[in-house]
Length: 506
Image 1 (cartoon, rainbow, N blue to C red):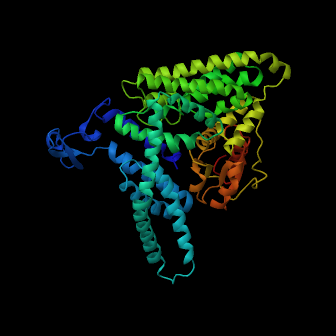
Image 2: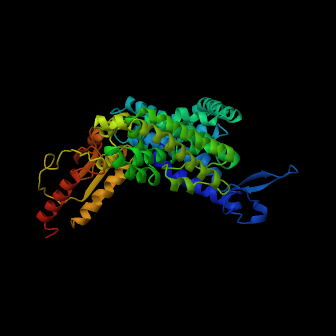
Image 3: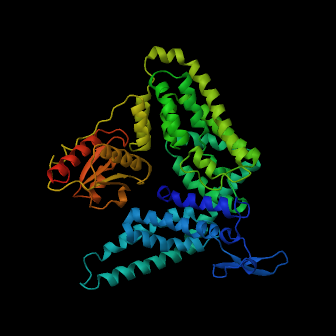
């Protein structure tokens, strides 16, 4: 629910960084702190502000407040509803989520993540009650009014039931974080967060807990260090640098390329196999993460919005003025601490590793993908760096070599329809271009958003069955990773053969 909507979070963060009163380009109209009586532009939406003497005056709403209160929760709810029950589910989910939004005084990210899928699921069950029993000509009437009535009822129920509950949960979580801050124990969060990242629980902790709390802190103080607890690229960089200098075998050879993917690309999962290969190294990662949190706490620094993905570029883009020293130091010091501890541990086990004649990286990559529950393009690239080869069924085994129409549409499908599938689509576009094949549209989508209009659907092996249900007439191809699969060459040859047969190309 969160990942497809991260561009909206980034947009809100950039708007906040630029236009609030403490931003780079303060603007009372866009930032929502301007007095409508003195600034002008009277057509803009306004609310009532309160002056120091107690009098009220019209004040611009701006973009920052409405986006965080309404837009982002509704996008999350709509995405959750679509996953469960398509467009109809998304509409009902959005209606119901308005209940938790207006029933609370805090941004309802947690409420949207609960209400959105639940509302869509209930609508799906209710529709089944009269499925096939509606008289001809009354289908639209029943469908429209049933969704409207259910949405209304769920919005009211969410207002009185779920909104107070989620508000109390958020307050409890916020109090817990504040208690750690008051006791100067915020670095202890890394003891939970860093191992959880390696086990792919980072999204649950980051997007499910830290991001909502961080957003609330941003509204109150203009920034939050919670956005950097999980997204700090420093510990991963320090670990990979230690392997690049003191590792052996494929781990040493793979580490420099992994550094680029992790630190600049923001895909942290490429360093997880290095930790799984030597679990003792989690000590260095925890120490580095705690150092980063402590640095931000000392300098009272943080980010305006989530750094997504966790790239140093995204981190700096979301850093408000006044926080650059603390944020940059948090990355540098966390990397340094992780590097020093990891280097000592690697040097201490070097003789034993050399005697074993295997660093176990390939097995660790496989274990990482097992923890994630699906293949990963970033880990696939790491496998390529480590000399691993991917296997996948050929197009010839799935479709006839010559069809009656040219290949026009290829879709890459993954869970979120973003990072991994986008990289795979980019690889195939490049191969088609080099082969001189034109007129083929290559796009990336979430499996839940697939339509049955593609010639080929390429998905990770674990998702192929779900993709077939969404696009039953397309030719489905499975890959182990999206970066270096031989399936792409087969698709290029098939596309070229079909176009030649159809007379599209010579």
